[in-house]
Every structure is written in structure tokens, then in C-alpha cells.
Image (cartoon, rainbow, N blue to C red; front, top):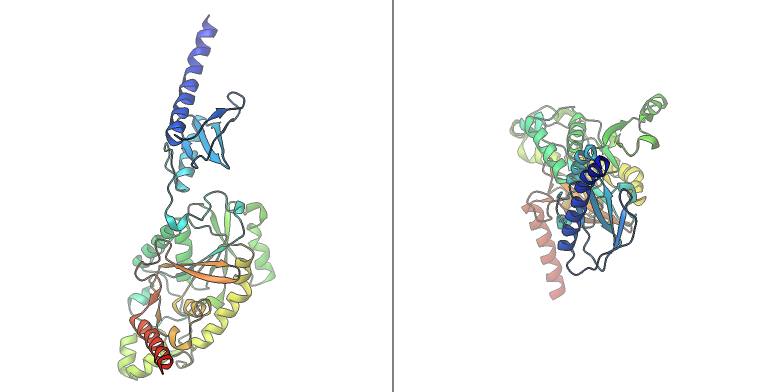
Length: 379
């Protein structure tokens, strides 16, 4: 008698939870006919549905999910609930809800395991590092290794929040600390919570030491590849000097020419053309093949190395690229599909200000070109 009473008490919460789950499912699928067709607890229970909306319902003791027209309900034990709730929230789901809404720009992205997605298109995320200490002081920085300010740290974290739902398989950074700090801080906000591991390829011994990242650790980590080719443009003898003071000393026109001309070099420094040659060559040889293979890539670099890459991606002219300004810590999103790059702007919306910093000068330049073409046609 005691055993029967005990069994009844133990089975009541399970029965109650099953009924509670059925109620949630019926509310979310008013037009669907649900037919139970499988075995009893604790094995999975399978249901068939008629054009049912994709649903992911988490009740107190069960997880109900829907895919390919089939609903499945699996038991969730007490000690698993916390991690389950956390994983659902990271994936953009609302626990104890019968409907999952994801922002439109992420509608084509998979919230499941990144390795299970289709290789139809790849995502390229470009981020200029957060504000550095010399950015704050308006100094020529170039290849000097300067860290982020507190504002730059906040920008890096905010960038991570913007891209947290985008899949990332590999990260490329420059050899400078402001790029590396930005990448690492941004990755702390990513939904997958993978551990970033810097992969060193400088020497054979460095390659051996970098084997902490391997196929066995691929699901828990993301490789971060350091490349000097992505470094900022070398400003030579201008590095460390205040930009405004240098303009007063050397002349505004001369400093503007050094900074914004395509082929002009500052003393013992690089022109934008020279920076483009190394950055775009590396992009074509190392990064683009990753995208072609279906990998999703994030590149965290600098104003001029990214300006060079954008010139290649968007087929900008030498006149157009010199007017291109990039905000610190703001992600830019591209879709790579069928050997073409499609600019999507910001992960939070393509119209957001400052995302793709076409300046007024560049807009005016483009309009003048269009006017010239129209004038020629009218003649």
C-alpha cells in the first residue's frame, strides 16, 4: 500500500508537467493536429504536426522542440535546467515561451551548432579597433603599439554585443595590441562562449606550441590568427606627433596630402597604396579562401588596412577610398556568396549612422561623377 502511494506521489509532477506542456503546444499550434505516436517517459515522445510554426518550448521538466514538421519532447532533469536555460537565452530564445523571435537581420543565421550550417554563404565581419590612447590624444599612431583607452574597451565590448549572434569560425588580428584587445573583448560577448586561442605561425616551434588549438578542441575554441600584414599604415617620422601641431609646422596641405592621398608617402613611411598592397594580398591569399570554404570570418584591424580591404571589396577608386572614414569599434558586415561580397552594413541595421563611414566629401564626389555621366549622355 505504501509503495502504491509513493508511486502515485512521484508520478503526479511528471503527469502534471506533461499536461502543462500539451497545453502550451496547443496554444501555439491552434491549426495543427497533434497525434502521439511513441513510447512513454523517459524516452522521447514524438508528435506529428501539420504546417506547424517552429516552436521551442521549455516547461518545468521537459524540453519540447520542433524541426522538419516533427515535435519532440525530452525529459530535463533538475540539475540540467540551469545550463539549458542559459543556452536557450544565448541562442536568442525566450524560455517558457511558445514562439521564438529573432531580429530580421539574423533570420538566415543558424542558432544551432555552427558546424551544422549549410555552406551556401559566409559572413565577413570587419571591425576597426576601439579608441587607443593615441587616438584620444590626436597623435599619429601608425605601427606604434598603443593600447585601448577605457572608452576603447567599452567600444570593443559594444562591438561584441552587436555581433554576438553571428557565427564566427576564425578571427584575424594585426600584430598590434589595440587590435588584439578589441578582438578578445568582443569575443567575450559572443553567444557561443568559445575560448579564443592565438595561433602562432612565426616559427616551426611556435606552430608546435599553438597545437593547443586542434580538431579535438575545435568545438570549444576559436582560432585567432595574428598577421603583421593587417597592421596600421606606417607613418614613419610622423608617428608620435600631434596631428594638429604637425599641420601647423609642416603646412595643412602637406599633412593632408600625407594622410589622405593614395600614393603620397610621409617621411620614411608608407603610402596608402603600399599599405593596400600588403593588406589586400594577405586578404586574397589567406582570408578569402576561408570564406570560400564556408568559414565565417572576423577581421579586427586598423583604419588604413581596413580602408584598403574595403577598396577591394567595394571596388572603390583611388579618389573614393581617400574620403572613406571608419568609426572605431563599429562592426561592418559582408555576405560572401558565389565569389561576390555583398555589404550589409551593421549587424543591427544597415542604416545606422557611422557604420559604413561614407563621408559627405565622398558622397559629393560620387554625385559629381553621376552628374558628369548624365551631362555626357544628354550631349
